[in-house]
Length: 384
Image (cartoon, rainbow, N blue to C red; front, side, top):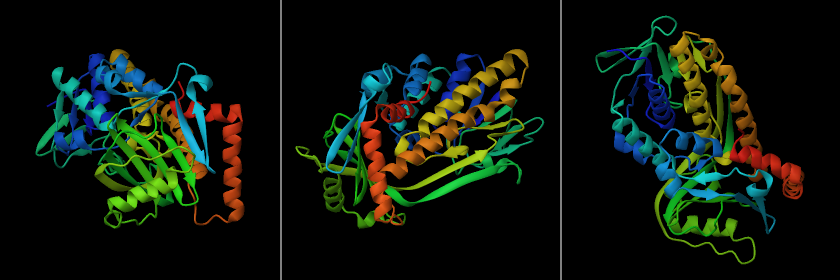
């Protein structure tokens, strides 16, 4: 069996890459170890940058996104008993974010690939990449897939990155001393826009997934056990951290999903070896405070699509050779923004009174300086 691009992973990066390549007349096969039902139900990111929305719409997979997504023209920073709105429509005119769950993006992409006759295979075991420097091929379940290029879009725990020989990659990583307890609840959002709340009790985020489903996060210890957080305790803590401004009441409802997410950062350089190219979480992870994970994956795929189009159309590998360098500029900018948002809004046990007062002072600067607020807005909605 042969194809031009073998893609490992049917998350948003792998599926979008397959679809964009299809639009350029380039064949691909997508291999995914999980079931279709699993990947379509796997709840992850939900904030799409302007560039991500534009990419999906231009690729013809944005109809439901435009119909059901929730456009936002700002976010709220809440601290010290006050609310401060970062107004995108004023600071970055014409650009915004859209709240639309990652699992919904995956559903749309799977439907598009299957409707176009795309080869997407689920529940594939024992995927392995071979001969990366010469004539690459993939093996799985006793079969062999020869290809010109392999795209590793299989996440942090996938097989792609470990296929690169030892000593090639330089790894940069950081573990934060807290985690996020996230929940989905059947309750209408209590705010029209996302609320980022910094309190002495810890960070909280009010988000949403639809007009009837809300998403919340709480800063918790890194070893937090979700079984020790019954619904009543979660709502009480969310109220304590979000009901800190006059006139705001947090509505509660049935919690139907909860989980604890570690806060960490990771970058592997370079994002390529031979004819293997890493994209998305296979190459980098950011703490979710800046809402960059899915958006970085889409940015990687855009760069890789252009490089592969050039390669198959002309035989030139110049864009493929510079793929990692091109992507890492955005990756490190997103790493910095995510680190900045995380340190700005979370409490650290290691901070003394001086450190916490300094944090509040910087929040005051961000909310009082148009230049600082513009920098936040530009990074949040995504640079062109």
